[in-house]
Length: 640
Image 1 (cartoon, helix red, strand yellow):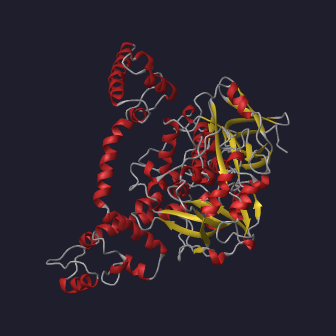
Image 2: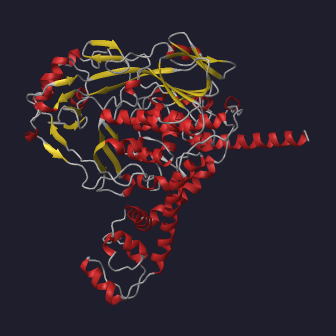
């Protein structure tokens, strides 16, 4: 039972991926923290696909790890197949992804929570907030009892008035087989918060014993799995494959025959779904000329026969799901263990949040995860981490922590949420990051570990290793600029690599700019400790060498992006005071006034990213801001 007499610094509502990170980081920053969930057995449950990472999402996970979060460690402990995606492209878009043992992942996160000092986990349901003078003072439980606290982080996922659809049948639920969260939406609306309705879906889970894998294409993981966490030295666990198959014309005809009983096409579902991850019925409706759509069969764990049918998200009736699946090669005799379904749920428009994820209306109330209109475990975890950090900083009377767009994908994610209008579930893509060559997944530690250490989220031992890595990168870059090898040694080597010969000595640094040359090729001709360690297969030095090589090969592009950041930073550094009144600027458009007053941007840079605010609007604001500052200065001087 929850000790209602005890007061907590932070109460986190919901133990999904956002809630777990929020609670762990708050406790690690010294806050007495309570994590409340409706079902303790479903902590960090993977409601949809049993995987972590993927395109751009892998970047978020590595940033979470660099800041001292838990997700990367959990997937390293429970991953059953690791792959680095986009390896045929440049390093800016390489993205790690791992299949997880779904049940083990949840247990791993539960263990981290239960072993964390200053963190308590309790099963209950929060139905209301207790607010005094626009400040959080506690939460009210469905039993009628109250819990006192100084800050609340809401991470309710898809549970707020959740409604599950399978064909024309629907029922209330936060996930299949679980109750929805009732009452909280309505009470937040009474406090003045604007809410909307979104939708997401999940595919059927099938019995692997009824799959004919001989008719599918095997999809193995990487030969040498790369961990997500900078703390994990090596993935030792045996890896398992996924399998690829495709839908057929017959599949499409059967699915089309169910459109008259589809909750999406008959208007039963009113929530907006994710455009980037459409249901199978939407794919067939949208692309009628396609003869087939790829279907990935992904294992749910090492100790279960259950498989996830990736690419077949659906809310079609049960009979259509079964008939359609059995027309796919390898699935002719398949048995469904869990039906696919769509779920509608409430969310709250994130323009009601500060960049710290604290709400503008209620002091020390934070929103994180799908309640903000996001989708995905990784986005949720990143928001939970940031909300936990900022709630703790608030209670310690310290400066808030806001990552910029040029610092991290997390910064891009939050800036997009609080600045741009959400019309569908938000998903992170590499294309959303203007400076993605600088924000690579491989250098997240170099960008963010200092910050994590400053907040007490990184151990001294880990920080010392990080500082050594940083020092070695700089040291060896300088050294490679000085090393020049005799022509009678280097030219025969260059000839073997079909690389143009030298007429005069050139540094190894300059040679490594050539696309056909890399550090690994040169370890036998360059005599420095770094290359000796690479010969021995030292993973620490391999990571150092990777950073050196990217820095050298992409030097011009990296320098260009740094210059772009320097130019744009002057706009982000131009702060807009909270009391700045846009309604008094007569030359602004009505749309610009409405959006600027609602969003209340913190800087000129943020204001310029609001849809509907034109460059001429920004120029006007800058002039008025300068006048405002002059008036403030004169008033201040007059009061002296």
